[in-house]
Amino acid sequence: MTKKASGHGRYAVQHTKTELQIEIDTGSGFCFGVTTAIKKAEEELADGKTLYCLGDIVHNGMEVERLHANGLVTINHDDLRRLHNVKVLLRAHGEPPETYEIARRNDIQIIDATCPVVLALQSRIKRQFVNNPEAQIVIFGKNGHAEVLGLVGQTRSEAIVIEKVDDVKRLDFDRDIYLYSQTTKSLDEFHRVIDYIQSHISPQATFRSFDTICRQVANRMPNIASFAAKHDLILFVSGRKSSNGKVLFNECCSINPNSHQIEKAEEIDMDWINGVHTIGICGATSTPKWLMEECRDYILSHVKGK
Image 1 (cartoon, rainbow, N blue to C red):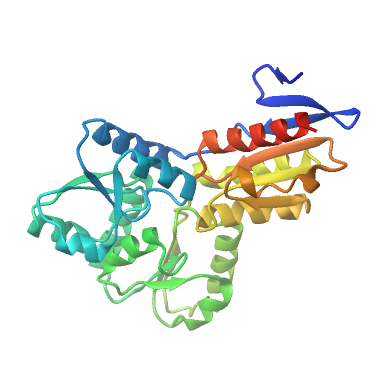
Image 2: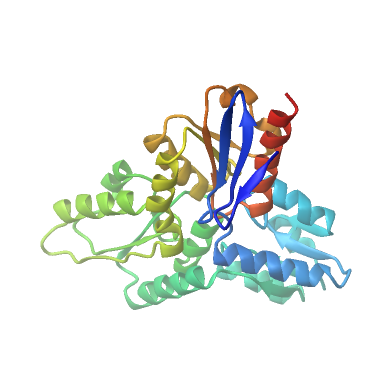
């Protein structure tokens, strides 16, 4: 007999003479930007018309498959250049100015689902570039990431992207530096980058840093650490392409070494359950709640089937 504890997403089932507790982290799941993008896609698809999306709408293969089944067509930038008179959704990560120009030329209707936090960051970087084009605009982020490409595009591709503290050595410390961050990067790493620049910048140069990390994402770090500490086993459900997922999963592992990253329920190895009394299921800002619930139900069905 399976029972659910009220209001906490906890499930219990009899497991080898002991009760196995499974809890889904209520703080995990889609962030505001992803939720809005998916809602816009679903509203457009409800009309039964073809909707294109520039890149995967979210870094989660299972959710992408679900929306593809409903008619969403994922395209790349080369495809965009060939399309005319269609609707294209821009996902939460944002796009560089060039994308909007292509859409204008090709009579493409843009459904803009860029996250408001990302849009604000794009505007800040563009203003800084226009006001002081001689300065080094530095973005702490992942090279090639969709959001970072959109940010770099605000500077005519002149911004410098650094992925880790070691990359900071490439900067010219005799010139002004304005530092920004991809919205989903680690706050601790960002502060290490700041410390390094502050200790090396020339007295004649200006250094300004802007904490542009999304708090909805940053606040998940302490929350997920607390969640990981509560359980014998952690199942972190996330697409392996998710930058945010990598950061949060690493945090889980640092707190609870018995943590496993999975993309779907079928990747769960039931041997992981042996000797375990409590399981915590959590995920990234790109992980749908329904997928975490599927993982819980997969475990419950296998345990009850024994």
